[in-house]
Image (cartoon, rainbow, N blue to C red):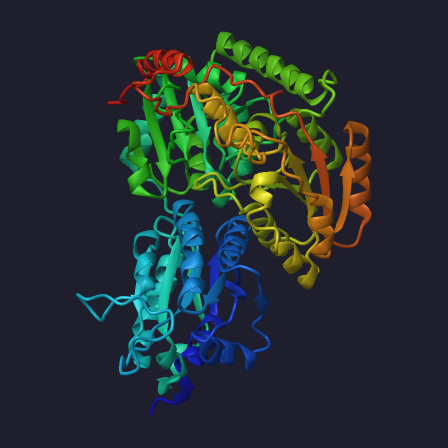
Length: 621
């Protein structure tokens, strides 16, 4: 007779999560590191009580539920999606705070499990505190908002429902193609309700992370396309890193001479000084990759979803004869751009294709062009790292100072504002996962909690956070979490008095930076064009328990970075920059609509330029 264990629903969920392992390439380890969250009336008697009696399954108290999901996402990404955290919240604002994090995880295809509390399933005490009432149905709560941003969503009305739901949770979380946020809405009464669960539910389970192999026909068609091309270009996306295919890509690129451009998610697929690495591509790309993209007659996309930043809003690849070969574990992405689709793991494909093409190499003329463009680009990066021509430090110089202070294995974390564009161009990534940008959702507030997740995933690596004043003010409270948990990160806080990225974008569309500067309201104009708002960022950081210092010039910034590396806990370095000294765009385009009708001459001019730019957009058929 099969045994049972009498547990509450919440206790059973935690017992299940503790026993889920993943295996890839013969290595097995636990999938869940623990639970992040905040307790309220909707989860404290359920998930909270269950965690209290499972001290071997860590619980981390965060300061914002959104930040909990960001931390889990940072951890999952740094772990190449082979590990994650679960996140818990109460019903109401605690749950809806997690929705932004869920959207980020799903858009970036990062596995995160969300366990929000929910309203009473038995309904007799309704409407309860924080309940969203609907006149058309009693089967609705704020947790229904998670549906469009979750890869899997379920509401548990009876304890025994988790017996079939939890395996589905794991199926999706460990899927190469379908992973993202998974939401289990847990009514607070059901969380605390007991049931005789079968012992087999809690046995150790190992979920195999497979490496799909390409079919022979697709492989042959890819080979034919490569052999028939003269100017092939690889676009390396995040799938290269998740597959841990960096070494295979380096060998393939060396043998064939095919240049490798990198997306935001794929940056670090090759070391910056590899002879075939031509750097960032697209709207935030550099000179070398964007020049090569324009004339490429074959684009080999590996693990990329071709976002508008990668394709420069479909203007990056201008050769009318350009063809595409896409290697991806997701069929949805493999078929984009009317490509020859190869449904396969990146590392498996590169290893097999290297053997097939062992007699192939790009011609000498193309190889020479690649080398000259690489050299020109490296000189441009050096120039931007050492401008030395303005009273205030430029953002490029700040990036250069951080890069010079970082070690070969250290990690750079950022997410939103002007930083991702400048970092994509300028950061010289040395090894895989040394560049951690959340740019699928470009979520302000991700940087600090995301960096905590990165550091927890690999404590041996120093983690530098590059954050602007605007995004810092959205979620600085997680500095407290980093101090609480002894998770040291180094935060470089750039004070440019507002939203520099959107300010620049506003200028480019003729709107003069309207509403993007951190200025007080002027008594005369009644607009936000008075003095700068007086914010003491150093005092703010110190109040959260961090070490804090202000760098007034480039030399002080470099000294502060060296000091921060030696300190024992999270450090914030504040540096004021000149936001108008920007890193240039390099023959790229990004489609941002401009008002078609306006009385403002600058908007009229911007619209004319916009219409000219749009003429370069085209379909890849």
